[in-house]
Image (cartoon, rainbow, N blue to C red; front, side, top):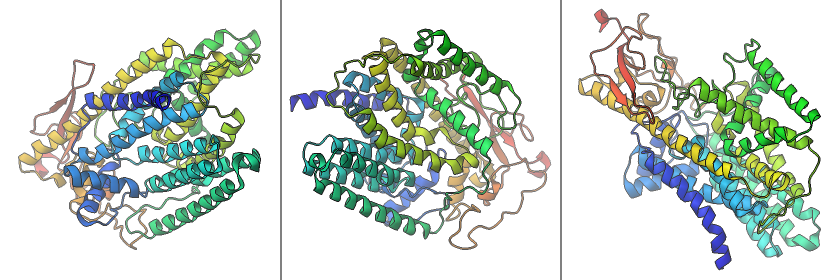
Length: 582
């Protein structure tokens, strides 16, 4: 018992590290962030009425997180921050589970802790942990399923295997009601675990364990079908389509290539360790690495309609939705350009470390195979069994991302589950192929990333609080919110105060819910996504540029802090109509 508790202390430290970094970042703002504004309002209505009523924006089912958010509202009262703290609770539990998974996957306690911190202290994980988006709870559904599968594979009795398989199925089904793609745990990971159990021989797993596992999987598949059937018949949802209308193969391949580079950046404290492998390789291997580097440079510099800039890390456009050079959410629809947080020199350094780490990993594959290092991991699962357990899930997950790659793009937050899989393989490969202990440099890199992440989250929420402050200033002058364009995230919440749904053309039920919005007057400053919010007719708008549209409005600018810079960011109010038309 004492040994078991000792092994859980590193996992607890990972959870506390997440909580500590979040608290010192001051992550609060009373407005919607990305998609979560409409989600928060659904949770508020659920807490008040006991019914889930969608409002035109969700494509995810959200059920589990809605009930969790409603419980927090009941306990602590309503605010955007209160609801988001329910996600933080799940993020803390997820950090604990990831560390235990890595140990169960054959990684030493020390290496598992460093690897877990590399992911959970990344800006992507920490940012999503203090929103009401479905990504973190979807990740929790996947990792709890994976943990249950590993425990089933390592069980010494059939009854224990049955118990852990049933736990994996139940946890994945319940938490997957928030984000449907997480159900790949039941549909891909559980069958893979059962295959591994069966391949060991019935004497090892027990006939009852196999039959019980397949019965639980079949029941889970029926549950998934029933939930999807129910969700498809709910009013004011956005139905998802498995097949894109078009299949632009070059664009899809480019999106996945960008995603690999982005994943390397998001796991930088681990992937950068492989840089040293480039200089340890033979001349032939160095030549192969050089060819890869030259090829990357050529493709990056060659003109292409698939990208508009040189692909320096963080990757721009839709992939760097959360982790980008501005250190705020990328898709704002606010006039002007936000200030740069990462200069070009820093981008070049990050690109060299992440892409160079990938080249080093590739180079290590070409080196002569070394004698496996002895590792002090308390449990172990073979490479073959890990591959069988995780590769079908990974392939299925990547295939389900293809429609997004063809349309909206693969955003960085879509990679969370795949990052856990990559982390397991990278850390275990390093400790067995390179050296048993991750070097001290990895701890230093984790600390640097954590400091960066704290600054990013602080600046992120400071910016959102500034938008709330500038809206309050305009409202205090007698101008209603419907006369202000404060970016689509703020506008959506305003729209839902005047309507029961976002006016989205993708809504199928009820029929004719979408009504095409008449265009704004011809001399109005252009406003993207006006069709989604027909109640908003802007007279003023929030801007990074005081001279945008028809110039400054008679309102004081609002400044927001930007760690570690002394110069704050500034938001202005600009006119959306000529002065004579006010």
